[in-house]
Amino acid sequence: MTFGPLRRSPLVGQAAERLRDRIAAGHWPVGTKLPGEMALGKELGIGRSTVREAIRALAGAGLVESRQGSGVFVIATEPVEDLTTRLRRASAAEVYEVRNLIEVRAAMLAAERRTDEDLAALEAGLAARAAALGDDEAYIDADIAFHASIVAAAHNDVLTDLFAVFQVTMRPGLLDLLAVMDEKGLRTASADPGADAHAAMVAAIRSGDATAAGRVTEAELAVSLGILRD
Image (cartoon, rainbow, N blue to C red; front, side):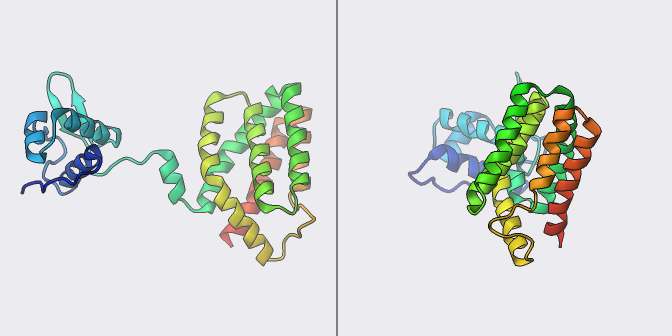
Protein backbone atom coordinates (compact mmCIF):
# COMPACT_ATOMS: atom_id res chain seq x y z
CA MET A 1 0.00 0.00 0.00
CA THR A 2 1.44 3.37 -1.02
CA PHE A 3 0.39 6.96 -0.39
CA GLY A 4 -0.97 8.91 -3.37
CA PRO A 5 0.50 12.30 -4.26
CA LEU A 6 -0.67 15.18 -2.11
CA ARG A 7 -2.60 18.12 -3.58
CA ARG A 8 -1.29 21.67 -3.42
CA SER A 9 -3.29 22.75 -0.36
CA PRO A 10 -2.43 22.72 3.37
CA LEU A 11 0.04 19.84 3.43
CA VAL A 12 0.01 19.26 7.17
CA GLY A 13 -3.72 18.55 7.18
CA GLN A 14 -3.45 16.25 4.19
CA ALA A 15 -0.51 14.39 5.67
CA ALA A 16 -2.29 13.97 9.01
CA GLU A 17 -5.38 12.67 7.20
CA ARG A 18 -3.35 10.10 5.24
CA LEU A 19 -1.60 8.89 8.36
CA ARG A 20 -4.86 8.80 10.29
CA ASP A 21 -6.50 6.73 7.54
CA ARG A 22 -3.70 4.16 7.65
CA ILE A 23 -3.93 3.92 11.42
CA ALA A 24 -7.72 3.47 11.24
CA ALA A 25 -7.29 0.77 8.58
CA GLY A 26 -5.00 -1.20 10.88
CA HIS A 27 -1.84 -0.71 8.85
CA TRP A 28 -0.14 0.33 12.08
CA PRO A 29 -1.93 -1.46 14.96
CA VAL A 30 -1.99 -0.06 18.48
CA GLY A 31 1.47 -0.41 19.98
CA THR A 32 3.23 -0.16 16.63
CA LYS A 33 6.08 2.28 16.17
CA LEU A 34 5.62 4.62 13.20
CA PRO A 35 8.36 4.88 10.58
CA GLY A 36 10.75 7.78 11.09
CA GLU A 37 10.11 11.29 9.85
CA MET A 38 12.48 10.86 6.91
CA ALA A 39 10.79 7.65 5.73
CA LEU A 40 7.30 9.09 6.07
CA GLY A 41 8.36 12.30 4.34
CA LYS A 42 9.79 10.35 1.43
CA GLU A 43 6.57 8.33 1.01
CA LEU A 44 4.37 11.40 1.25
CA GLY A 45 6.65 13.62 -0.78
CA ILE A 46 6.93 16.26 1.94
CA GLY A 47 9.59 17.63 4.24
CA ARG A 48 10.40 16.37 7.72
CA SER A 49 9.02 19.52 9.34
CA THR A 50 5.62 18.91 7.71
CA VAL A 51 5.69 15.29 8.86
CA ARG A 52 6.50 16.49 12.36
CA GLU A 53 3.50 18.86 12.39
CA ALA A 54 1.21 16.13 11.06
CA ILE A 55 2.32 13.80 13.84
CA ARG A 56 1.66 16.54 16.37
CA ALA A 57 -1.87 16.77 15.01
CA LEU A 58 -2.30 13.02 15.43
CA ALA A 59 -0.96 13.26 18.98
CA GLY A 60 -3.46 16.01 19.71
CA ALA A 61 -6.23 13.70 18.51
CA GLY A 62 -5.01 10.99 20.89
CA LEU A 63 -3.88 8.61 18.15
CA VAL A 64 -0.12 8.56 18.68
CA GLU A 65 2.33 9.24 21.47
CA SER A 66 5.93 10.39 21.22
CA ARG A 67 8.23 8.55 23.60
CA GLN A 68 11.54 10.16 24.37
CA GLY A 69 14.38 8.25 22.77
CA SER A 70 12.09 5.55 21.37
CA GLY A 71 9.99 7.13 18.64
CA VAL A 72 6.30 7.66 17.92
CA PHE A 73 3.85 4.87 18.77
CA VAL A 74 0.20 4.30 17.88
CA ILE A 75 -1.95 4.36 21.03
CA ALA A 76 -5.48 4.40 19.51
CA THR A 77 -7.19 3.84 16.17
CA GLU A 78 -9.99 6.38 16.65
CA PRO A 79 -9.47 10.06 17.54
CA VAL A 80 -10.49 11.24 20.99
CA GLU A 81 -13.19 13.92 20.87
CA ASP A 82 -12.86 16.92 23.11
CA LEU A 83 -15.83 17.76 25.32
CA THR A 84 -17.07 20.58 23.12
CA THR A 85 -17.16 18.32 20.06
CA ARG A 86 -18.95 15.60 22.00
CA LEU A 87 -21.52 18.05 23.34
CA ARG A 88 -22.33 19.25 19.85
CA ARG A 89 -23.41 15.68 19.02
CA ALA A 90 -25.46 15.31 22.18
CA SER A 91 -29.21 15.71 22.35
CA ALA A 92 -30.67 18.62 24.31
CA ALA A 93 -32.02 16.11 26.86
CA GLU A 94 -28.55 14.63 27.41
CA VAL A 95 -27.10 18.08 27.94
CA TYR A 96 -29.84 18.90 30.45
CA GLU A 97 -29.17 15.73 32.41
CA VAL A 98 -25.53 16.74 32.87
CA ARG A 99 -26.46 20.38 33.48
CA ASN A 100 -28.52 19.09 36.39
CA LEU A 101 -25.43 17.50 37.95
CA ILE A 102 -23.39 20.68 37.55
CA GLU A 103 -25.92 23.36 38.38
CA VAL A 104 -27.59 21.77 41.38
CA ARG A 105 -24.27 21.47 43.14
CA ALA A 106 -23.23 24.94 41.96
CA ALA A 107 -26.42 26.45 43.42
CA MET A 108 -25.76 24.76 46.76
CA LEU A 109 -22.20 26.08 46.85
CA ALA A 110 -23.42 29.52 45.78
CA ALA A 111 -25.76 29.62 48.78
CA GLU A 112 -22.78 29.02 51.04
CA ARG A 113 -20.25 31.28 49.32
CA ARG A 114 -22.11 34.10 47.54
CA THR A 115 -20.93 37.65 47.99
CA ASP A 116 -22.90 40.90 47.73
CA GLU A 117 -21.52 41.28 44.21
CA ASP A 118 -22.77 37.81 43.30
CA LEU A 119 -26.25 38.62 44.59
CA ALA A 120 -26.28 41.86 42.59
CA ALA A 121 -25.34 39.89 39.46
CA LEU A 122 -28.14 37.40 40.09
CA GLU A 123 -30.72 40.17 40.54
CA ALA A 124 -29.48 41.80 37.35
CA GLY A 125 -29.81 38.45 35.63
CA LEU A 126 -33.44 38.13 36.67
CA ALA A 127 -34.13 41.62 35.34
CA ALA A 128 -32.38 40.84 32.05
CA ARG A 129 -34.47 37.68 31.55
CA ALA A 130 -37.68 39.64 32.13
CA ALA A 131 -36.60 42.46 29.82
CA ALA A 132 -35.82 40.03 27.00
CA LEU A 133 -39.29 38.48 26.85
CA GLY A 134 -40.62 38.55 23.30
CA ASP A 135 -37.19 38.12 21.73
CA ASP A 136 -36.33 34.43 21.96
CA GLU A 137 -32.65 34.76 21.13
CA ALA A 138 -32.10 37.62 23.59
CA TYR A 139 -34.11 35.73 26.20
CA ILE A 140 -31.98 32.60 25.79
CA ASP A 141 -28.79 34.65 26.05
CA ALA A 142 -30.09 36.29 29.24
CA ASP A 143 -31.10 32.92 30.69
CA ILE A 144 -27.69 31.38 30.02
CA ALA A 145 -26.00 34.43 31.56
CA PHE A 146 -28.21 34.09 34.65
CA HIS A 147 -27.27 30.45 35.17
CA ALA A 148 -23.61 31.30 34.55
CA SER A 149 -23.91 33.85 37.38
CA ILE A 150 -25.10 31.13 39.75
CA VAL A 151 -22.15 28.93 38.79
CA ALA A 152 -19.78 31.88 39.23
CA ALA A 153 -21.21 32.49 42.70
CA ALA A 154 -20.06 28.98 43.69
CA HIS A 155 -16.47 30.28 43.44
CA ASN A 156 -15.12 27.02 42.07
CA ASP A 157 -12.94 27.58 39.02
CA VAL A 158 -13.38 24.04 37.73
CA LEU A 159 -17.18 24.34 37.81
CA THR A 160 -16.96 27.72 36.10
CA ASP A 161 -14.73 26.35 33.34
CA LEU A 162 -16.91 23.28 32.88
CA PHE A 163 -20.07 25.37 32.58
CA ALA A 164 -18.29 27.62 30.07
CA VAL A 165 -17.82 24.57 27.83
CA PHE A 166 -21.53 23.76 28.15
CA GLN A 167 -22.48 27.33 27.26
CA VAL A 168 -21.05 26.86 23.78
CA THR A 169 -23.60 24.15 23.00
CA MET A 170 -26.57 25.13 25.18
CA ARG A 171 -28.06 27.84 22.98
CA PRO A 172 -29.42 25.66 20.12
CA GLY A 173 -30.99 23.23 22.58
CA LEU A 174 -32.66 26.03 24.54
CA LEU A 175 -34.10 27.53 21.36
CA ASP A 176 -35.45 24.08 20.52
CA LEU A 177 -36.98 23.93 23.99
CA LEU A 178 -38.84 27.21 23.43
CA ALA A 179 -40.13 25.90 20.11
CA VAL A 180 -41.46 22.76 21.82
CA MET A 181 -43.08 24.85 24.56
CA ASP A 182 -44.79 26.95 21.88
CA GLU A 183 -46.08 23.81 20.18
CA LYS A 184 -47.49 22.59 23.48
CA GLY A 185 -48.97 25.99 24.37
CA LEU A 186 -46.87 26.20 27.53
CA ARG A 187 -45.91 29.86 27.21
CA THR A 188 -46.90 33.19 25.71
CA ALA A 189 -44.69 35.96 24.39
CA SER A 190 -45.45 38.18 27.39
CA ALA A 191 -45.11 35.59 30.16
CA ASP A 192 -42.12 33.72 31.51
CA PRO A 193 -43.15 30.31 32.91
CA GLY A 194 -39.80 29.99 34.66
CA ALA A 195 -39.81 33.39 36.36
CA ASP A 196 -41.00 32.15 39.76
CA ALA A 197 -38.51 29.27 39.82
CA HIS A 198 -35.61 31.51 38.93
CA ALA A 199 -36.62 34.06 41.56
CA ALA A 200 -36.81 31.22 44.10
CA MET A 201 -33.25 30.20 43.21
CA VAL A 202 -32.01 33.69 43.95
CA ALA A 203 -33.99 33.83 47.20
CA ALA A 204 -32.54 30.53 48.41
CA ILE A 205 -29.00 31.59 47.52
CA ARG A 206 -29.52 34.96 49.20
CA SER A 207 -30.76 33.29 52.40
CA GLY A 208 -27.80 30.90 52.44
CA ASP A 209 -30.06 27.84 52.30
CA ALA A 210 -28.00 25.36 50.29
CA THR A 211 -30.60 22.59 50.48
CA ALA A 212 -33.35 24.83 49.15
CA ALA A 213 -31.09 26.24 46.44
CA GLY A 214 -30.27 22.76 45.19
CA ARG A 215 -33.87 21.60 45.40
CA VAL A 216 -35.30 24.57 43.50
CA THR A 217 -32.63 24.39 40.81
CA GLU A 218 -33.17 20.66 40.33
CA ALA A 219 -36.92 21.13 40.07
CA GLU A 220 -36.60 23.92 37.50
CA LEU A 221 -34.24 21.92 35.30
CA ALA A 222 -36.43 18.82 35.68
CA VAL A 223 -39.40 20.67 34.18
CA SER A 224 -37.41 21.57 31.06
CA LEU A 225 -35.95 18.08 30.83
CA GLY A 226 -39.42 16.59 31.05
CA ILE A 227 -40.62 18.73 28.16
CA LEU A 228 -37.62 17.74 26.05
CA ARG A 229 -38.13 14.05 26.76
CA ASP A 230 -41.81 14.22 25.83
